Length: 494
Image 1 (cartoon, helix red, strand yellow):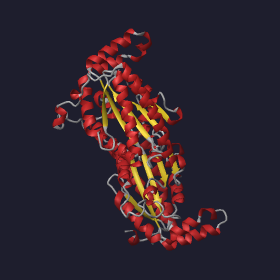
Image 2 (cartoon, helix red, strand yellow):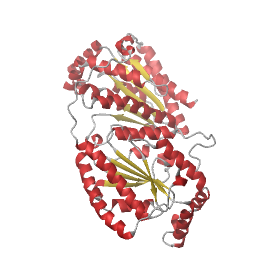
Image 3 (cartoon, helix red, strand yellow):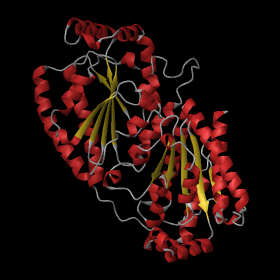
Image 4 (cartoon, rainbow, N blue to C red):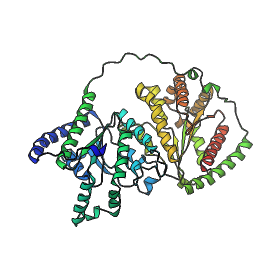
């Protein structure tokens, strides 16, 4: 593929200046329009060392308003980044609505590696390609414009540029011994780059190969591609969609007609004496396991979902009661703020993930997309239906990194919920826990129940299964949660 690219393409300086003047004006207009329409843009620059990524990025941003973009040079990951899934540092830098993010190198570093494509000796294409395609698809589905450039030069041209840099005292530091080693393996890297392009050239994230030996030609091609892509995307954003006909109710799988929650035995209980013994036992066990996962740098992600008044807070307190506070964090999740709303809904959860050896406990989670946002109409039907796969892909990426994932649904009966609501209203020290929203949600019990059933069915996977916790008896629920977390961590450590 790359060996057949014509690298002799060039443009006269006079013609370049004439064309570039109009392209610069148009790009500035499109940046303002993208901001107005709240369309986020990601531009990725990959390519050979010395292909001119820095020069061409600088050329691209000259006509842009610097308040509306960020350039992210992405060197090899540091220690903090290596302790998290490889996409973590890129998710954190995804742009808010209306902003532009330009990546000088990107998530593709992970699959090129040090010349083995990240595959080691196996010879099998890197499984991270699936993670990358999922990442890019999620961003595109959420409305992000994605433009990807591969800057191509010949082996001869690369050698020439390395030597010119070495001869320049101010720039010689940029050429390292590692660069020359990679240069000698040019043909091996070419095959890896070809595989990278073939594996990840998609409709929503197509590659543009830029003939970069003539920098003026390369700059024109980059401007034209960015402008063409933005024009097409912004045209769609401007067009008013016709009012959609009422969607026909689509029946789910037969299992959804018989509620999973109806089959839960809520009569399960445990005596106060047995509870005291088991709490001490499992809390001591979890303390030891917390240190064990720290030594082995295994991250743990524990999710709590459940009915209002199901006892999530008390359950979390017992889980953390004997843990070293330096090794865990509890993340309470409320309605998204303005900054979070301007990003993909998963963005704020990526920001809260634990590094290797630490535990993060989410009190409410990304499942809000298919629960409260679905029931209350805070997102479209297409968005919450799409979220099942997005969530499964997200959790699979965490599992591939080696994370322990434990997901709890705390289940109580409707009668028990009413009892707890009324108790909260009577007791002054608990009255703050009950709000008008809790009562409104209770009126939608059946709709939430339907959403929970479908959530569990579609997102309980081999790598991240759901555990339904019988929580009418708070003591029983706490012991089950403690035991489940301990066993999940022990299984991972084995």
